[in-house]
View 1 (tube, helix red, strand yellow):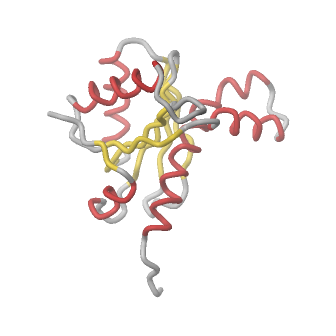
View 2 (tube, rainbow, N blue to C red):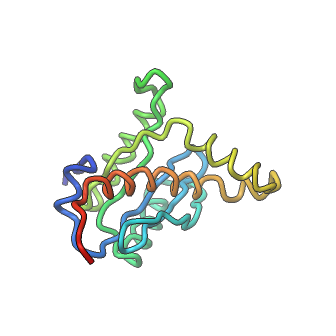
Length: 162
Protein backbone atom coordinates (compact mmCIF):
# COMPACT_ATOMS: atom_id res chain seq x y z
CA UNK A 1 0.00 0.00 0.00
CA UNK A 2 1.54 3.31 -1.09
CA UNK A 3 1.08 6.32 1.14
CA UNK A 4 -0.95 9.22 -0.18
CA UNK A 5 0.62 12.62 0.38
CA UNK A 6 -1.92 15.40 -0.10
CA UNK A 7 -2.02 19.17 0.24
CA UNK A 8 -4.65 20.97 2.30
CA UNK A 9 -6.39 21.77 -1.00
CA UNK A 10 -6.57 18.13 -2.12
CA UNK A 11 -7.41 16.86 1.38
CA UNK A 12 -10.39 19.14 1.98
CA UNK A 13 -12.89 17.58 -0.48
CA UNK A 14 -12.05 14.10 0.81
CA UNK A 15 -12.65 14.81 4.50
CA UNK A 16 -15.85 13.36 5.94
CA UNK A 17 -17.86 15.70 8.19
CA UNK A 18 -16.66 15.84 11.80
CA UNK A 19 -13.50 13.83 11.12
CA UNK A 20 -10.46 14.76 13.16
CA UNK A 21 -6.88 15.24 12.01
CA UNK A 22 -3.78 14.19 13.92
CA UNK A 23 -0.69 16.40 14.04
CA UNK A 24 2.74 14.79 14.33
CA UNK A 25 6.02 16.38 15.36
CA UNK A 26 8.58 13.68 14.57
CA UNK A 27 11.74 14.02 16.59
CA UNK A 28 14.73 11.73 16.90
CA UNK A 29 13.85 10.79 20.52
CA UNK A 30 10.15 11.61 20.76
CA UNK A 31 7.01 11.94 18.67
CA UNK A 32 4.69 14.76 19.67
CA UNK A 33 1.02 14.22 18.84
CA UNK A 34 -1.93 16.58 18.65
CA UNK A 35 -5.53 16.25 17.46
CA UNK A 36 -8.11 18.59 16.04
CA UNK A 37 -11.61 19.04 17.30
CA UNK A 38 -14.36 17.57 15.10
CA UNK A 39 -15.02 20.97 13.50
CA UNK A 40 -11.32 21.09 12.57
CA UNK A 41 -10.85 24.56 14.05
CA UNK A 42 -8.58 23.99 17.06
CA UNK A 43 -5.50 21.80 17.48
CA UNK A 44 -4.89 20.44 20.98
CA UNK A 45 -1.74 18.76 22.26
CA UNK A 46 -2.41 15.06 22.87
CA UNK A 47 0.68 13.19 24.05
CA UNK A 48 4.36 12.54 23.55
CA UNK A 49 5.60 9.11 22.58
CA UNK A 50 9.15 8.15 23.60
CA UNK A 51 10.58 6.63 20.43
CA UNK A 52 11.69 3.02 20.64
CA UNK A 53 11.17 0.85 17.56
CA UNK A 54 9.18 1.91 14.52
CA UNK A 55 6.63 -0.91 14.88
CA UNK A 56 5.87 -0.09 18.51
CA UNK A 57 5.72 3.67 17.87
CA UNK A 58 3.44 3.17 14.87
CA UNK A 59 1.17 0.82 16.84
CA UNK A 60 0.71 3.49 19.54
CA UNK A 61 -0.10 6.11 16.90
CA UNK A 62 -2.53 3.80 15.09
CA UNK A 63 -4.33 2.96 18.34
CA UNK A 64 -4.79 6.68 19.05
CA UNK A 65 -5.88 7.29 15.44
CA UNK A 66 -8.56 4.61 15.86
CA UNK A 67 -9.70 5.94 19.24
CA UNK A 68 -10.08 9.51 17.94
CA UNK A 69 -11.40 8.51 14.49
CA UNK A 70 -8.62 10.30 12.65
CA UNK A 71 -9.20 10.91 8.93
CA UNK A 72 -5.68 12.08 8.02
CA UNK A 73 -2.28 12.83 9.49
CA UNK A 74 -0.44 16.16 9.36
CA UNK A 75 3.29 15.73 9.88
CA UNK A 76 5.86 18.45 10.24
CA UNK A 77 8.44 18.48 7.45
CA UNK A 78 11.69 19.87 8.87
CA UNK A 79 12.95 21.94 5.95
CA UNK A 80 16.22 23.84 6.05
CA UNK A 81 15.89 27.60 6.46
CA UNK A 82 16.45 28.03 2.68
CA UNK A 83 13.52 25.67 1.98
CA UNK A 84 15.67 22.74 0.88
CA UNK A 85 15.33 19.24 2.29
CA UNK A 86 18.14 17.82 4.37
CA UNK A 87 18.64 14.53 6.23
CA UNK A 88 15.85 15.22 8.78
CA UNK A 89 13.30 15.88 6.02
CA UNK A 90 14.41 12.69 4.27
CA UNK A 91 13.99 10.77 7.55
CA UNK A 92 10.47 12.21 7.91
CA UNK A 93 9.58 11.13 4.37
CA UNK A 94 10.94 7.63 5.13
CA UNK A 95 8.79 7.49 8.28
CA UNK A 96 5.71 8.51 6.25
CA UNK A 97 6.43 5.81 3.64
CA UNK A 98 6.83 3.14 6.32
CA UNK A 99 3.72 4.28 8.17
CA UNK A 100 1.76 4.37 4.91
CA UNK A 101 2.49 0.68 4.44
CA UNK A 102 0.54 0.05 7.68
CA UNK A 103 -2.40 2.44 7.28
CA UNK A 104 -4.32 3.86 4.30
CA UNK A 105 -5.00 7.32 5.77
CA UNK A 106 -3.38 10.17 3.84
CA UNK A 107 -0.66 12.51 5.07
CA UNK A 108 -0.21 16.24 4.66
CA UNK A 109 3.38 17.45 4.93
CA UNK A 110 3.48 20.82 6.71
CA UNK A 111 6.53 23.08 6.79
CA UNK A 112 7.60 23.05 10.43
CA UNK A 113 10.45 25.54 10.31
CA UNK A 114 10.65 27.39 13.63
CA UNK A 115 7.65 25.57 15.15
CA UNK A 116 9.60 24.32 18.17
CA UNK A 117 11.22 27.74 18.61
CA UNK A 118 7.81 29.44 18.52
CA UNK A 119 6.34 27.01 21.05
CA UNK A 120 9.38 27.31 23.33
CA UNK A 121 9.11 31.11 23.21
CA UNK A 122 5.41 30.87 24.17
CA UNK A 123 6.24 28.60 27.11
CA UNK A 124 9.01 30.92 28.31
CA UNK A 125 6.58 33.86 28.13
CA UNK A 126 4.22 31.81 30.33
CA UNK A 127 7.06 31.25 32.82
CA UNK A 128 7.03 27.49 32.30
CA UNK A 129 9.98 25.81 33.98
CA UNK A 130 12.65 24.17 31.88
CA UNK A 131 11.40 20.74 33.04
CA UNK A 132 7.80 21.61 32.10
CA UNK A 133 8.92 22.92 28.69
CA UNK A 134 10.81 19.69 28.02
CA UNK A 135 7.73 17.69 28.99
CA UNK A 136 5.23 19.47 26.70
CA UNK A 137 7.18 21.04 23.83
CA UNK A 138 6.85 18.12 21.39
CA UNK A 139 3.08 17.76 21.64
CA UNK A 140 2.66 21.54 21.60
CA UNK A 141 4.82 21.70 18.46
CA UNK A 142 2.54 19.02 16.93
CA UNK A 143 -0.46 21.24 17.76
CA UNK A 144 1.30 24.26 16.20
CA UNK A 145 1.99 22.26 13.01
CA UNK A 146 -1.59 20.95 12.89
CA UNK A 147 -3.05 24.41 13.54
CA UNK A 148 -1.28 25.68 10.42
CA UNK A 149 -3.16 23.16 8.29
CA UNK A 150 -6.46 23.76 10.13
CA UNK A 151 -6.15 27.49 9.43
CA UNK A 152 -5.45 26.74 5.75
CA UNK A 153 -8.48 24.41 5.55
CA UNK A 154 -10.63 27.12 7.15
CA UNK A 155 -9.53 29.66 4.52
CA UNK A 156 -10.35 27.13 1.77
CA UNK A 157 -13.83 26.33 3.14
CA UNK A 158 -16.65 28.40 1.64
CA UNK A 159 -18.55 30.47 4.20
CA UNK A 160 -21.82 28.91 5.25
CA UNK A 161 -24.84 30.74 6.61
CA UNK A 162 -25.80 29.49 10.07
